[in-house]
Figure 1 (cartoon, rainbow, N blue to C red):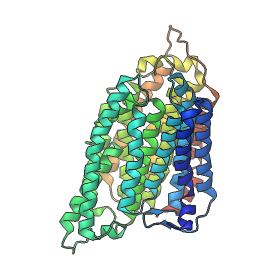
Figure 2 (figure 1 turned 180 degrees about the horizontal axis):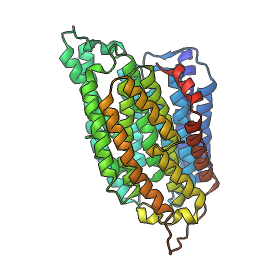
Figure 3 (figure 1 turned 135 degrees about the vertical axis):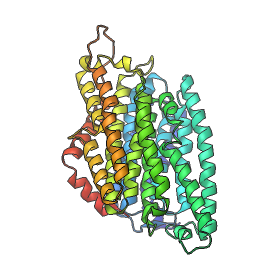
Figure 4 (figure 1 turned 30 degrees about the vertical axis):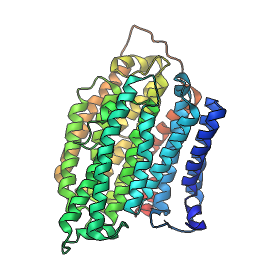
Length: 471
């Protein structure tokens, strides 16, 4: 690895080295607030370097890219890590989290997500994916006195190990058919004239199974509600945003390397998309636990993003990146509000726990209502604009039937999101003693709320930036 490669990797190195430093510091300096604050500062530093540093090379050891597309997602995941640590300050203190270990794991997860988003090789894809997946196994069970957390981590570990097996075997088959790990050369096995085409299709099918697990696509979604419910709220937010977003980012890179796009795998992707939209919607209707409801709603959201991936071309990729960015902001805002409503006694998860909270805490209640309505696609939020550009791109690509399914799913989703809003602002005779939101929690909520509204009202600047990033 050359000096230029190290400079190009500097944002990810800041995350990884800061992670190691915080892990060591936590062993002899157990000050929770200070360590988490330093972790947040390190994540912001990585985001700043990714945003302003022009790397001397755009390719790192034929494994990762350092171009504008890779730096955009490195910046995004660094910001997600910083916001996650901010909403973990009070939450972690009340549960006596080891701040050095927790901050180190969050930063290392962000580094793995940045590596996956930057991958231009199947080896880089495997390394990046497993780097943050291994971290999430630990973070999900980080609250040692929470039995549901241990159960959730075990389910994620077992199913994750199966997905890793599919991923490794799929990569092996792709290598056998093409003779290389590099993209787009590794896609050569899909050539209709190639003698190893069936092997290549099987390999790419197995790879999609593994990535479908990470994205919670139906029928690989069964772990999602249990893991969402059992994991600490800030970790659930990180899992719902960065973990899935990084996989989608690398899928855009894979699609860009295919001469015919995803045409060869479009029937399979179409089935996964339709099932995710329909099954996720129907399951969300029956939920009385907010975190489980959000888990099934996330399955539906992944269906919309898969629809954008299938649309292909500049319009489809641009729509995917825009809605992915909006989804990250909206989803992280929801979990920030949930974290602010939690106490040392536990999290408010049942919908009845939220009855009347919007009346007693109007600012947080209003913010949560905006985030939920944005996820439902109500204007003038980022959710509406994101779904609009996805449906337009899909119609241009001829995916009319899937667009109809998506519109129907979106209309039905208004019911289960609005149900939470109604409970929030329903009168309740019992006065629950909740502490006011801390400053850092209020900052994260305000930041996500402002971004949700700005991206819905003025999407043009971000769409322009994204148009210049598409690989």
